Image 1 (cartoon, rainbow, N blue to C red):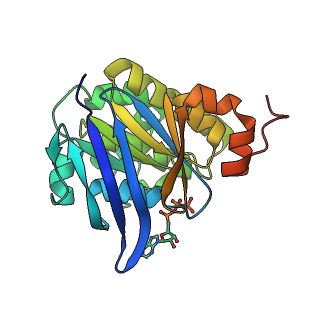
Image 2: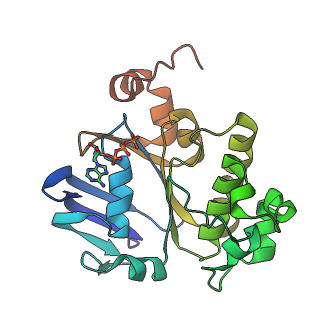
Length: 239
Ligand SMILES: Nc1ncnc2c1ncn2[C@@H]1O[C@H](COP(=O)(O)OP(=O)(O)OP(=O)(O)O)[C@@H](O)[C@H]1O
């Protein structure tokens, strides 16, 4: 059996005394993709923050390439190949697009040229300042910047939130290409179940800090009863 890229075993985590994740176990294989679904406030973002090392973990372990990183600082996890695109995007407003892209870049498959090829809109806007971009362009910039750190695993926190449909399509195409071209594994936290399930191989659904359902993404998309029960998504009419 091949070793998992990332493995969480019995993880309990939260903020201060508040426990948000109860007992999370999951595995992400190299070059694979996982959707994390669930209603508002169930702990999806907290799961990504925990993988990065930003929450208070009180039980369980996190392994990366088989090594225990439970007590490893966030910046070392990032250097070790875990990339994170925060919900807030965190673009530097006074830097240009190109400066934003290159400021944290590390050598690897993803070069500035390849990012411009993947996200042509960023090439057009290369001289614009971060604060002159639309929400969708900021999201593309955040994705491009994270890819330029050449991670083995990318954590994407609701990248499509609040974006126009045409931008959602552009971004989804880039994420598809990112996996196909380079096999960059990713975990996608998303409210849009349809988009998340179309982009990923596997899915988990969270409810009050626990994983309550695991499935292949294409199977879950066909499982209307589960989607309705756990996410409140009425999809029967939609497909
Ligand atoms: N920094 C924080 N300090 C304390 N509690 C927090 C903090 N961030 C989130 N929480 C709490 O943790 C719980 C889970 O939040 P989280 O953002 O992980 O959920 P989510 O599933 O990502 O929701 P959403 O889809 O609304 O982003 C919520 O009750 C939230 O209030």
